[in-house]
Length: 310
Ligand SMILES: Nc1nc2c(ncn2[C@@H]2O[C@H](COP(=O)(O)OP(=O)(O)OP(=O)(O)O)[C@@H](O)[C@H]2O)c(=O)[nH]1
Ligand SMILES: [Mg+2]
Ligand SMILES: [Zn+2]
Image (cartoon, rainbow, N blue to C red; front, side, top):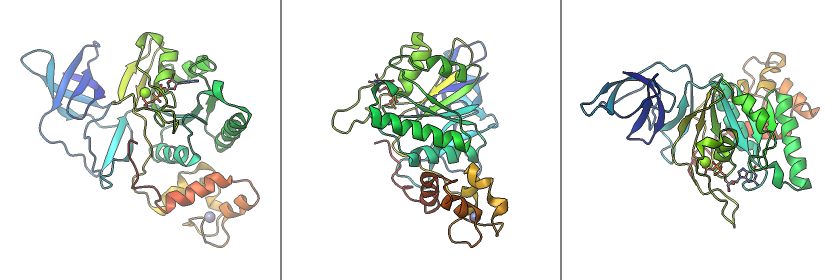
């Protein structure tokens, strides 16, 4: 039997076969994946082979298909381990919000760096535009301009009011998309907006800190009636990066990558080297301060050990 993993709870996996029948599966023995230490050897989106048990609706996964790509981040507290959020995706969509809760550029840039590392197209979507006051509106417009200039598609939507939902539907059509973002930004609400029949559970925003309540607890791949699949995921506080070499970090900022040939040193880290084209562009305002500061923070491995579901 062959199928795709649509949900993983850590010990159980839901596997959907081509004829859209789902089976509850477990892993047969230990799986080791060469080169990465992960808390989950099998992730949503993995193509697997399994043996059907006698009861006819459960299975044992014995083979994991080669991954076309995957999105991985540092796991909860166990900083030596990583967690594969999903495999075999066509695009990564960051759902961000200016308020309730606020998403920082540091968070967005870490997700983008990971997408660049695995050559996965990424999109930045600002949700909740119905609640923004003038100040928040100015902020999301400035962030949209920032990411658009760097080369990422951007979008402003309201799951609540339906604003931009038809564009969001177009973005999803025919693709397998992974949604990520903090708890409460409205990932699940947006899925409900494009596919109301799914009627997924959404949570409230807690009063004092304006944070989400971690309503979605497991990643799940859902079929879209207009074609394609969407992977809803639990909100995360930080997007911990797995280790990259310093040189690699600069290659994952497209606007820095473009300037590297103009740096005096081919292995320039754009920090202290003379004749650095990135620093020159920063001084001229052609490279955004926010991106450069986040770059430095990633280089210095800041925040790597505070990866947690808050
Ligand atoms: N005003 C407004 N509220 C929204 C919008 N989108 C979502 N919400 C609300 O925000 C809260 C959180 O939405 P969810 O969809 O559960 O958020 P989530 O990102 O899935 O959160 P987790 O599952 O915890 O990661 C709910 O009360 C939604 O009704 C929006 O566009 N505008
Ligand atoms: Mg959710
Ligand atoms: Zn340089």
